[in-house]
Structure formats: C-alpha cells, structure tokens
Image 1 (cartoon, rainbow, N blue to C red):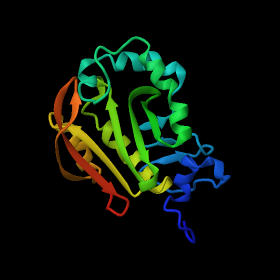
Image 2: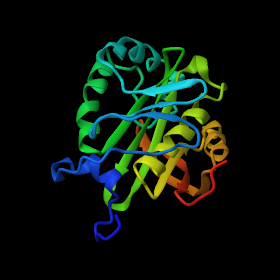
Image 3: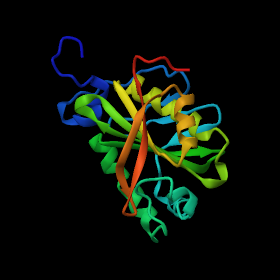
Image 4: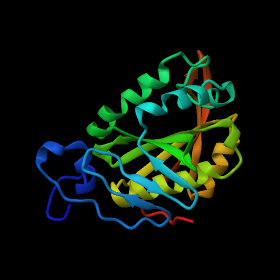
Length: 218
C-alpha cells in the first residue's frame, strides 16, 4: 500500500486481516471476466463468456460426490482419493467457509448452464503475495476449453482484485493436457520437479508453471 511498509496489498489484507477494520470495497476491472463483489471474507462470483465461477453450496455435495468418484478425474490430482469416500464431498464443502474467511484458500465451483463442471481454487501465501492454483474438470467436459476459460478468470481475479504478485501451478508429467491449458493462458514453464510428490505412495514428477502480475496476458 502506498505510504506503508506492509508488503501485503490492501485487497489481500482484507482476506487475511479482517480484524484491522479495513472495509474498503474491491473495485477492479478484469480483462476476461465480470465480478460480483461480495463482503470481505466472502468469495466473489466470476462470470466469463460461458461460465459462472461461484461459491460451493451444501446442496452441491451429491453432484461433487458423483463427479469425483470417476477414477479418471481423481488420478490427475494429488489429493483426491479413489474410491472417493461416501460423504467426502459434504466434508469438503463444509471446510470452505473457514478457508475463505482465513484467506488461506479460495475455491470456486465452475458451472456451465447452472451445472457444476469442475472446481478451481487458489492456495494463498499472503506474506509473499503468491498463490498456487489447482483445479479439476468433470470427465464429460474434458477438451471443451473449460479449464482454460476458468483459469483466465481466476488469474485475473488473483492479480487485479487480490493483488497477488505470482500465481503458480503444477501438473503431473503424465498429464500434458494441463500443461497446454497453462501455456494458453500465458503461464511460463519453469521446469520439472523430479519426484516432488507422492501419489498413492509412488514418487511423481511435476511440471511447474507460473505467471507474474507483470507478465503479458494473452
């Protein structure tokens, strides 16, 4: 903020420091999405040409349970188990309010024609104005450009509304389609992280991509 030694911008401070009493509204113009701004500590709804990215609701649990029960979806993620346990979707959605209020994690349901087709989230490290983006897309909607469109909206929101400096993403070496999505939105491939994670006890290589706020956006 101008005139302050605090390295965390005001928009980001609204997410992690609500006790400060700062109640300034977020006003931003995104290059690829319209935003419906909510109160501090809540989640903005993002609108693109085809999609609405909105907060999850408790009644979304049955749909999420069904979509994440597909092996093809789960095996492309680090933490979603297969088989997906009964009741896991309800537990997952139930954690969102705390995550969002604390500013540690923002997560959206990706919807098309009011139907959930995936999810996308930002894991925020406020002290460094950095976040990692992660997502999954329902198997029936792969190859339709949904991840690309949603990622553009979330990147713009992260940079323009929250004032992050860096947003990064990783994908398994065996999932090059995710790398194609990241390149389409202007993220830079920064290298391969060998054996960086364990999936079901097996070391996996990840490809690392990142974008800075100052980078051009296609």
